[in-house]
Image (cartoon, rainbow, N blue to C red; front, side, top):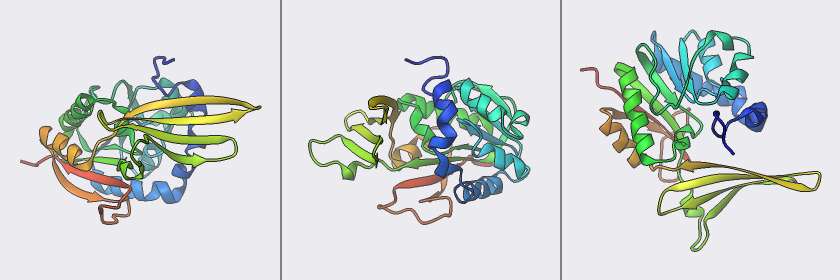
Length: 246
Protein backbone atom coordinates (compact mmCIF):
# COMPACT_ATOMS: atom_id res chain seq x y z
CA UNK A 1 0.00 0.00 0.00
CA UNK A 2 1.22 3.52 -0.81
CA UNK A 3 1.22 6.48 1.55
CA UNK A 4 2.02 10.16 1.00
CA UNK A 5 5.65 9.20 0.34
CA UNK A 6 4.74 7.06 -2.66
CA UNK A 7 6.93 3.98 -3.03
CA UNK A 8 9.68 5.42 -0.81
CA UNK A 9 8.12 5.41 2.65
CA UNK A 10 9.85 5.18 6.00
CA UNK A 11 10.77 1.48 5.74
CA UNK A 12 12.35 1.87 2.29
CA UNK A 13 14.04 5.15 3.24
CA UNK A 14 15.58 3.57 6.34
CA UNK A 15 17.48 1.01 4.28
CA UNK A 16 17.93 2.92 1.04
CA UNK A 17 21.58 3.94 1.47
CA UNK A 18 22.59 0.40 2.42
CA UNK A 19 20.67 -1.16 -0.47
CA UNK A 20 22.40 1.17 -2.95
CA UNK A 21 25.77 1.16 -1.18
CA UNK A 22 27.79 0.71 -4.38
CA UNK A 23 26.31 3.92 -5.78
CA UNK A 24 27.52 5.87 -2.72
CA UNK A 25 31.16 4.90 -3.22
CA UNK A 26 33.47 7.88 -3.99
CA UNK A 27 34.41 6.38 -7.36
CA UNK A 28 30.70 6.28 -8.28
CA UNK A 29 29.81 9.73 -6.96
CA UNK A 30 32.92 11.68 -7.94
CA UNK A 31 32.49 11.62 -11.74
CA UNK A 32 28.83 12.62 -11.41
CA UNK A 33 29.70 15.63 -9.28
CA UNK A 34 32.53 16.61 -11.64
CA UNK A 35 30.17 16.77 -14.62
CA UNK A 36 27.39 18.57 -12.77
CA UNK A 37 29.69 21.10 -11.13
CA UNK A 38 31.18 21.90 -14.52
CA UNK A 39 27.75 22.47 -16.03
CA UNK A 40 26.55 24.53 -13.06
CA UNK A 41 29.50 26.93 -13.22
CA UNK A 42 28.64 29.89 -11.02
CA UNK A 43 24.92 29.06 -11.12
CA UNK A 44 22.50 26.90 -9.17
CA UNK A 45 21.61 23.21 -9.53
CA UNK A 46 18.16 21.62 -9.29
CA UNK A 47 17.96 17.92 -8.41
CA UNK A 48 14.75 16.11 -9.26
CA UNK A 49 14.27 13.20 -6.87
CA UNK A 50 16.92 14.41 -4.41
CA UNK A 51 16.31 11.46 -2.08
CA UNK A 52 18.81 11.06 0.75
CA UNK A 53 21.35 13.39 -0.85
CA UNK A 54 23.75 10.97 -2.54
CA UNK A 55 24.64 13.59 -5.18
CA UNK A 56 23.29 16.81 -3.69
CA UNK A 57 25.51 16.77 -0.60
CA UNK A 58 28.89 16.33 -2.33
CA UNK A 59 27.81 18.77 -5.05
CA UNK A 60 26.97 21.36 -2.41
CA UNK A 61 30.35 20.75 -0.78
CA UNK A 62 31.88 21.72 -4.13
CA UNK A 63 30.31 25.14 -3.70
CA UNK A 64 27.30 24.65 -5.98
CA UNK A 65 24.00 25.89 -4.48
CA UNK A 66 21.58 22.94 -4.75
CA UNK A 67 17.81 22.84 -4.42
CA UNK A 68 15.88 19.57 -4.53
CA UNK A 69 12.40 18.30 -5.30
CA UNK A 70 11.14 15.01 -3.87
CA UNK A 71 7.78 13.41 -3.14
CA UNK A 72 9.05 11.39 -0.17
CA UNK A 73 9.30 13.18 3.15
CA UNK A 74 10.87 10.03 4.59
CA UNK A 75 13.76 10.19 2.13
CA UNK A 76 14.24 13.91 2.73
CA UNK A 77 14.29 13.31 6.50
CA UNK A 78 17.30 11.04 5.89
CA UNK A 79 18.95 13.83 3.91
CA UNK A 80 18.28 16.32 6.68
CA UNK A 81 19.93 14.05 9.26
CA UNK A 82 23.23 14.06 7.38
CA UNK A 83 25.98 16.64 7.77
CA UNK A 84 25.11 19.62 5.61
CA UNK A 85 21.66 18.26 4.80
CA UNK A 86 19.81 20.95 6.71
CA UNK A 87 21.41 23.61 4.50
CA UNK A 88 19.93 22.27 1.25
CA UNK A 89 16.55 23.61 0.22
CA UNK A 90 13.98 20.95 -0.67
CA UNK A 91 10.46 21.32 -2.03
CA UNK A 92 8.12 18.39 -1.41
CA UNK A 93 6.16 17.39 -4.49
CA UNK A 94 6.01 15.55 -7.80
CA UNK A 95 9.07 16.59 -9.78
CA UNK A 96 7.14 16.43 -13.07
CA UNK A 97 5.03 19.44 -12.10
CA UNK A 98 6.37 21.08 -8.93
CA UNK A 99 7.77 24.58 -9.40
CA UNK A 100 10.39 26.28 -7.24
CA UNK A 101 11.57 29.86 -7.21
CA UNK A 102 14.58 31.09 -9.12
CA UNK A 103 16.57 30.12 -12.17
CA UNK A 104 19.02 27.24 -12.51
CA UNK A 105 22.09 26.55 -14.63
CA UNK A 106 21.66 22.79 -14.47
CA UNK A 107 18.88 20.37 -13.54
CA UNK A 108 19.49 16.65 -13.21
CA UNK A 109 17.78 13.27 -12.82
CA UNK A 110 20.17 10.43 -12.02
CA UNK A 111 20.13 6.69 -11.28
CA UNK A 112 17.11 5.85 -13.52
CA UNK A 113 14.81 8.23 -11.63
CA UNK A 114 13.12 9.49 -14.82
CA UNK A 115 11.50 6.04 -14.97
CA UNK A 116 9.67 6.71 -11.68
CA UNK A 117 7.30 8.72 -13.85
CA UNK A 118 5.16 5.88 -15.13
CA UNK A 119 3.42 7.52 -18.09
CA UNK A 120 4.69 9.19 -21.23
CA UNK A 121 2.62 12.28 -20.42
CA UNK A 122 4.34 12.65 -17.05
CA UNK A 123 7.78 12.26 -18.59
CA UNK A 124 6.97 14.89 -21.24
CA UNK A 125 5.68 17.24 -18.55
CA UNK A 126 8.91 16.71 -16.59
CA UNK A 127 10.98 17.98 -19.51
CA UNK A 128 8.70 21.00 -19.85
CA UNK A 129 8.91 21.68 -16.13
CA UNK A 130 12.71 21.56 -16.23
CA UNK A 131 12.84 23.88 -19.24
CA UNK A 132 10.83 26.46 -17.28
CA UNK A 133 13.40 26.33 -14.47
CA UNK A 134 16.51 26.63 -16.64
CA UNK A 135 18.10 29.90 -17.59
CA UNK A 136 19.30 30.49 -21.18
CA UNK A 137 22.15 28.08 -21.90
CA UNK A 138 21.16 25.88 -18.94
CA UNK A 139 21.32 22.09 -19.17
CA UNK A 140 19.14 19.14 -18.21
CA UNK A 141 21.08 15.94 -17.42
CA UNK A 142 19.48 12.49 -17.26
CA UNK A 143 21.20 9.21 -16.34
CA UNK A 144 19.08 6.20 -17.23
CA UNK A 145 19.35 2.59 -18.33
CA UNK A 146 18.85 1.39 -21.88
CA UNK A 147 15.98 -1.15 -21.78
CA UNK A 148 17.42 -4.67 -21.71
CA UNK A 149 14.96 -6.11 -24.20
CA UNK A 150 17.66 -8.05 -26.04
CA UNK A 151 17.86 -10.29 -22.96
CA UNK A 152 14.23 -11.36 -23.44
CA UNK A 153 13.71 -14.53 -25.50
CA UNK A 154 10.31 -14.96 -27.16
CA UNK A 155 7.59 -15.61 -24.61
CA UNK A 156 9.58 -14.33 -21.61
CA UNK A 157 9.00 -11.01 -19.85
CA UNK A 158 11.43 -11.16 -16.90
CA UNK A 159 15.13 -10.29 -16.63
CA UNK A 160 16.90 -11.17 -13.34
CA UNK A 161 19.56 -8.76 -12.10
CA UNK A 162 20.43 -10.25 -8.70
CA UNK A 163 20.47 -13.88 -7.59
CA UNK A 164 21.58 -14.73 -4.06
CA UNK A 165 20.95 -17.23 -1.31
CA UNK A 166 18.34 -15.08 0.42
CA UNK A 167 17.69 -12.27 -2.06
CA UNK A 168 16.47 -12.22 -5.65
CA UNK A 169 15.67 -9.28 -7.89
CA UNK A 170 14.29 -9.15 -11.40
CA UNK A 171 12.62 -6.75 -13.84
CA UNK A 172 9.43 -7.50 -15.75
CA UNK A 173 8.60 -5.78 -19.04
CA UNK A 174 5.40 -5.04 -20.96
CA UNK A 175 6.60 -4.35 -24.49
CA UNK A 176 3.22 -3.02 -25.62
CA UNK A 177 3.03 -0.22 -23.04
CA UNK A 178 6.73 0.26 -22.10
CA UNK A 179 5.72 -0.41 -18.50
CA UNK A 180 8.16 -2.33 -16.34
CA UNK A 181 8.49 -3.24 -12.69
CA UNK A 182 11.42 -4.12 -10.47
CA UNK A 183 10.71 -6.94 -8.03
CA UNK A 184 12.68 -7.76 -4.89
CA UNK A 185 12.26 -11.02 -2.98
CA UNK A 186 13.97 -11.48 0.39
CA UNK A 187 13.86 -14.56 2.62
CA UNK A 188 13.80 -13.73 6.32
CA UNK A 189 13.56 -16.58 8.85
CA UNK A 190 12.37 -18.93 6.13
CA UNK A 191 9.62 -16.58 4.98
CA UNK A 192 9.70 -14.74 1.66
CA UNK A 193 8.91 -11.03 1.46
CA UNK A 194 8.15 -9.36 -1.87
CA UNK A 195 8.37 -5.68 -2.81
CA UNK A 196 7.96 -4.15 -6.25
CA UNK A 197 8.02 -0.70 -7.80
CA UNK A 198 6.63 0.31 -11.22
CA UNK A 199 8.57 2.21 -13.88
CA UNK A 200 8.22 3.29 -17.49
CA UNK A 201 11.20 2.81 -19.77
CA UNK A 202 11.97 5.17 -22.64
CA UNK A 203 14.46 4.92 -25.48
CA UNK A 204 17.11 7.64 -25.99
CA UNK A 205 15.40 8.82 -29.20
CA UNK A 206 12.09 9.13 -27.35
CA UNK A 207 13.72 11.26 -24.66
CA UNK A 208 15.26 13.43 -27.38
CA UNK A 209 11.79 14.09 -28.76
CA UNK A 210 10.51 14.97 -25.28
CA UNK A 211 13.37 17.45 -25.02
CA UNK A 212 12.51 19.00 -28.38
CA UNK A 213 8.89 19.42 -27.31
CA UNK A 214 10.20 21.36 -24.30
CA UNK A 215 12.46 23.54 -26.42
CA UNK A 216 15.70 21.78 -25.48
CA UNK A 217 18.32 20.33 -27.82
CA UNK A 218 20.73 17.44 -27.36
CA UNK A 219 24.23 18.61 -26.49
CA UNK A 220 26.00 15.42 -25.38
CA UNK A 221 25.29 11.74 -24.83
CA UNK A 222 27.75 9.35 -23.17
CA UNK A 223 27.63 5.82 -21.82
CA UNK A 224 28.71 6.98 -18.37
CA UNK A 225 29.91 9.96 -16.37
CA UNK A 226 33.47 9.41 -17.57
CA UNK A 227 32.20 10.45 -21.03
CA UNK A 228 32.71 7.01 -22.58
CA UNK A 229 31.22 7.15 -26.11
CA UNK A 230 27.64 5.91 -26.32
CA UNK A 231 27.14 2.93 -28.66
CA UNK A 232 24.49 0.41 -29.56
CA UNK A 233 25.87 -1.88 -26.84
CA UNK A 234 25.83 0.70 -24.03
CA UNK A 235 23.72 -0.46 -21.05
CA UNK A 236 22.85 3.10 -20.02
CA UNK A 237 23.35 6.67 -21.08
CA UNK A 238 24.04 10.08 -19.60
CA UNK A 239 22.35 12.65 -21.81
CA UNK A 240 22.69 16.44 -21.69
CA UNK A 241 20.08 18.68 -23.29
CA UNK A 242 20.60 22.42 -23.50
CA UNK A 243 18.19 25.35 -23.44
CA UNK A 244 19.11 27.71 -26.30
CA UNK A 245 20.72 30.92 -25.15
CA UNK A 246 18.84 33.08 -27.61
